[in-house]
Image 1 (spheres, protein in one colour):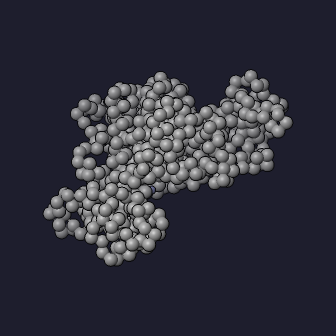
Image 2 (spheres, rainbow, N blue to C red):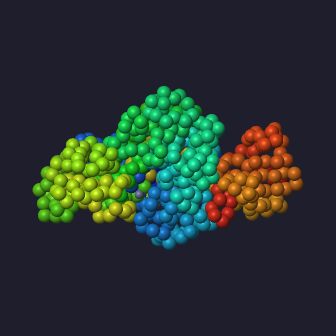
Image 3 (cartoon, rainbow, N blue to C red):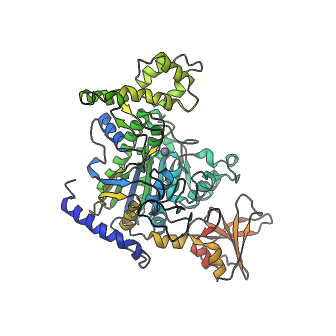
Length: 561
Ligand SMILES: [Zn+2]
């Protein structure tokens, strides 16, 4: 904390003043001065304060980001006290609060005290810091341990009213040209599992990515446009991970940084420790603490790079609380100050598998419950009732059965299997001394990244997500929706004179007619059945249909004269 001292206080005051006017100024000035070249944002999803305290006890020393802790972040939605990851991550990505399920879109209801309704309209896409960083010439990356189209990563490179639209979100992330994407989720890209029956794996290759599937391939590659998919859905918890099959979050972070940092203009990288949240839902303290420590190692990688690099901001912040995790529970009501510290962390430190990881070790007849739990989870005194409950656990639910058994032994309390509404811890390393401090709103994180990288989110929203029907109509173009040529990939068609644009939903191009092959941004997309070239015009971003309206890149509208 010392290295900031008075400078930090002055900077905090300056930021407080600046943030009042920043939004208004954004529209007037196109290029702004950056105070950093790179930003790395690391999110331990669903991590509350208390698990971080316990993780520190288990680790036996400070967490890598402890020395940079500078504030708390309010996580509430535009309408609800308790957020899910979609609006919580969107606030960090876009600077807008929204509602349950919304991915980088405005919400409908802005009823939380002190909020005004955005003038942009409801459920409309808003630009992310990743998209703005990309347009500034920087490289971009997303690293996670969930499937890569899960809410938090999707928040930075996808737009949809619903986080459940995996097909659309994965297509958008791929077409947003994120340079490095590392995580899980290849099953969601296979043609057979998709409503559009398109193989996104083929599209990844066609778009110039190198696809790696093992830690060995990840380690070996020198490519800078890189997709790494290491599991059909989410990756394993770090404790359960087979290091031959899946890389650690620290390894993925390290590779992403080395791939992105070759760009002299800089980079933006988001890293999510996705499954801290999932273990919290299951009330499994082993999964929570061990995945937090894996996340901590990824933070160390980012911080080591930043301290050497000198021009990199590192932000570590959870998106919302989860589970009401407490160190001390009902059983310590009368003995909390007589309970040695080892009671709380030793049982957890002993476990070598999470509740999820135990599942594959149990025999079909479940006769080895006692042995397996004693050997890998450190509980040697299971009651007969507990053994029966473990044996009965439905597939995929063992962590939520056995987690609370560990909680009871380690005197860890849980109040809920859902998210919680308290503030989360903010840690920031910023060599310029301009980091935010105090208790801030989640949307201020996006504004801080915007300032640090000299971006303009408002102008980027204008550039990437113009409301298409009215914009084309203003140019006297004829507009229609084509759901028959390729029913799985609906197109918005705009026509004027000889020029026709067929803008494909979730993708970064329009199929064009009446434009010269040599025109700016035009390229050969493929050939039709007769062997004739199909031309496309590259868009600055992806086309989004929110169920009511189309939002497309301004450069597509400009193609109609
Ligand atoms: Zn959650």
